[in-house]
Length: 248
Ligand code: G
Ligand code: G
Ligand code: MN
Ligand code: NA
Image (tube, rainbow, N blue to C red):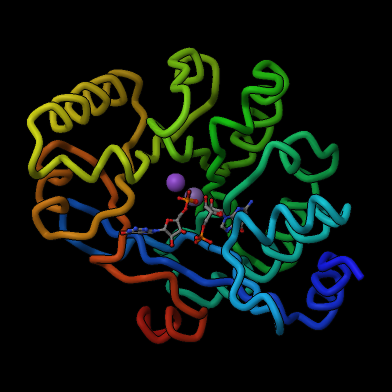
C-alpha cells in the first residue's frame, strides 16, 4: 500500500512530530523564537525530513491535511511559550493557493490563543513563481491580519528581485549556501552586504540561516542581520525540549 496511507494514519494518531529550531536576535543574543520543522518516523523508512513528508502528503492528496496538522500542533505548543517568542511556519505554493488556508490559519490562531503578530510564514521563492500576482494578493490578506511574511531560502534559487517590490514582506531569510563563506570569503561577504543594504532600504529584516560557527554569527551581527538560526544555536528539537529551553 502507498506510504501516504501510513502518513494519513500517523496524522490521525498525532504521530507526526513537529521539531523546533531556535532563532536568536543578533543585537543581544536573546532567543527570538523558533521555526517549526516537521519530521515523521516511519517504521520501515526511518526518520523522514520535512521535504519528504510534504512530498508524500502531496502524492497522496493529503497535503492540506498535513499543513493544517503542522500549523495546529505548532501553534498549540507555541501558545505555552513566554509571550515575546515568535513561531515560524513553512508554507508551500499549494498551501498559499488553497482557498481556505488563510481563513483556517486565523481560526487556528483564535482556537489556540496564539497571536497573529507572533506568527511568521516562511514562503519559498518556488512557491511564488506559479502566479506572482495571486501570491501577492493572498499574502496581503494574511499580512493585514498581523501575520509576518518571510521569503525563505533567499539566494538559493532564481532570486527574482521583483518579489521584493511586489510582495508584502517583513523578512528575507538568507539560504545556508549564502552564509557558508561569509567569514572566510570576501566575495560572499560582499554579496551579504549588498543584500542587507537593499533589505534595509526596503524596510525588510534579514534572517541568516545555517549558522554553524561563531565567526559566521559575528559576521551576520556586524553586517546588520536582525536574526540568526543554525546548528551553532541548536538543532531542531522536540517541543518538550524547546519548552524547557524557554522555561515554559
Ligand atoms: O528540517 P528539514 O531537513 O526537515 O527541512 C528540509 C526542508 O523541508 C526545508 O526546506 C523545509 O522548508 C521543509 N520543511 C520542513 N518542515 C516543513 C513544514 O512543516 N512544512 C513545509 N511545507 N515544509 C517543511
Ligand atoms: O529551508 P528551510 O529553512 O525551511 O530548512 C531548514 C533546514 O535547514 C532544516 O532541514 C534544518 O535542519 C536545516 N538546518 C538548520 N540549521 C542548519 C545548519 O546550521 N547547518 C545545516 N547544515 N543545516 C541546517
Ligand atoms: Mn524555512
Ligand atoms: Na531556508
